[in-house]
Image (tube, rainbow, N blue to C red; front, side, top):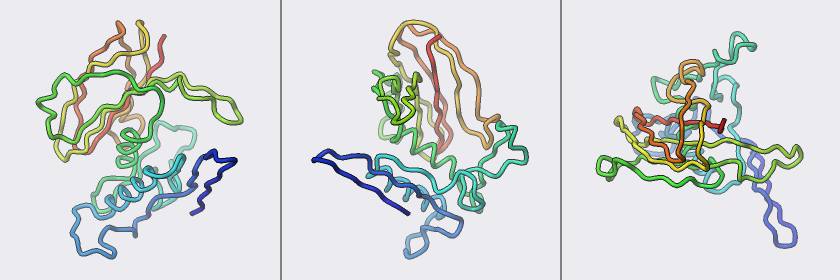
Length: 222
């Protein structure tokens, strides 16, 4: 693992971590007497949280690399919708499920969107949350100058029971928004669906979440 932290005349630059993750031999049971229902998934969850807490930019050790990876190597590289999650060990949660849950909760950036929970009583004392951001407010990427136009609406369930999030969100402008919804599923094809709705600019969304699952809407205004 290589870490880079630079400063110039008192201005902090990005803290970049080029590798993080676990393989199938990393376990919460290594070096501890605490039992864990998902020792391998817990180890991956713990190391990702540690890096999200302190770095500006980080990446998984490898998206596709045998028992380190998030995805299995596809049989047909020309058919990306068949790409499948690398399975969790012994029936535990796979790395993709853990990575998406943490990324959607803590590592999506942009101007926050105003929102209100419509079912606060049901959510009381529950570890569930909504996070909505407008990525068009982010600075261009260094080098390429690329800009994003997407709205990201993230729904995350940290509970081990199914939960429903009912949210009223104010989008930047009135109009028709369309894009994709990414939910649970071990392949892109299984987890993806197209969405399109009108915002005035308020929109109300009702999203069911399985245990420890997350859902993301990736939207553009038409």
